[in-house]
Length: 463
Image (tube, rainbow, N blue to C red; front, side, top):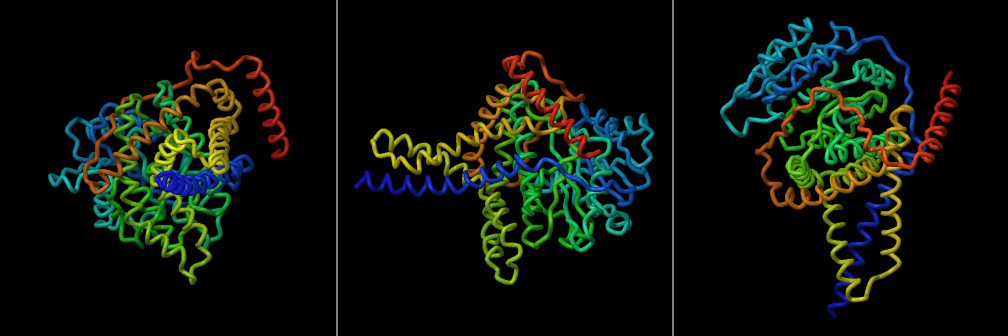
């Protein structure tokens, strides 16, 4: 009797796991063939409002201001507001000093101080800033696009030009309400930070890009995304206050049948934790918020998905529901592993589904790190190849940390008020360290030569 119960439960869990594994495998395969995004570059037209929320960022904010001052876009068409939010250090002073040094007349400092703990944090600061500007008729009527950068971010100088051009490339009635740019890492030379770097390359090329190419829902990453002020006005402002307000606003847009786009051609660079404890705290916060949004919106997404009057949005909503369920999938996967051990010890493993899921999982384990070799220019591809094994190891460790975070996040998902800040210290773009290059030299030469040849052929076709 016990054997039958264990086998049945295991079989159900394994089949649920297989559905998610196949979903990611399908996206991974599509990502192998979808590598380019093309649209005509347009004249600067859209007017941008950019918020940079800052909480005790005195160490890095000067470098951020200097980087943003290099943005190549008509200065009259974008304003950047640095929101010094409940700072106990000299963040505001550092911003003003950096702005003065860069002579950036379209950069401004807003200082916010609130005593209510429930009103602290990034989402509240964003909404406060919008309401402050709107009170003077300087937001919804003045700007076309709203963007968010984090205080530690660097950006490609043409980020606004690309968002502007991509948005205008759509027919007016089919334009997206949000565009997420390519998320990349500022730092990568510790094992933990490298795990983020590797996962970003994988996510951008084999999750974001294929989803966008298939007309599904690319994920909003919390920074480096643009949102139309019309959509923001439609939903009543930036009122998403969960610990993952980016996922929440993405879900709201999908429920409303709106289009979300992804831009693979321009990047924003984020500083990542370098210690296991820092990473665990950050990922726990993400998982905590993700579980909350899943419980709050998952059932609504399911009902909207089945609405016969909006059948054209079925696949987008199904895709978003699967993404909302990713924390549940991870939990089920962990339970499945436990049952696998139990079944093996009892000698009752149902071999066919087990081997199927194991084979596909192994395929993904190898495909995703290998796939990162296809992304970027020749130099990036070479670096990704040279650091293939460190990237694979770092991704595995990062995955283990997220397994821990997934469980803790579920236990604490009812608390969306406590925001544990990740300290930022990196003020430059890190380069690869030589000791990470451990791939056999001949393999490197062959694959780099192939990549160079492919690039030359592609350039010839474009020309």
